[in-house]
Length: 134
Image 1: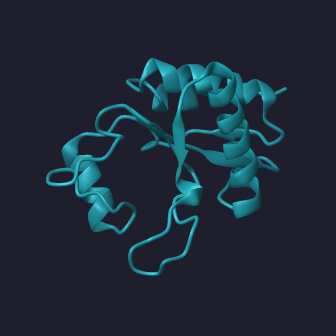
Image 2 (image 1 turned 120 degrees about the vertical axis):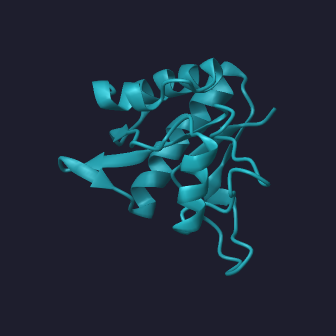
C-alpha cells in the first residue's frame, strides 16, 4: 500500500474536500504509486494564465476559467522506480484508482484521459487530470 508524501499533501491544499476524499481512497487502492506536483491543485488566475501561455492548459485563467481555479480539479503523476513518470500506461492505472474511488464514494468525476484536443483531435491529452462534475 502507498501513502502520499508531505509535498503531495501540500500541493493539494485548497482542493474541494470531495476530491481530497477521492484521492485519499485512491492512494489505498492504486496499483501504481503517485503524487501531486507543484501546480496540481488550486491555481491563481496568473498561474493559470502562465500555464496557458506555455501550452500546458487550454484555459487562460481569465476569460476561460480552469476548474483548478475553483478547487474542483486535481492533477497527478505516477511515481515509478523512484521518480515521477507521465507514461500513459502508468497514468491510466492511477486514473483507474481515482475513478474507482469516486464511484465507491458516489462522486461524479471527469478524467482528462478521455478528452481530445481541439487541434489534434487525439484523445488523452490531459491524462494526469481529474475533476469533479458539478
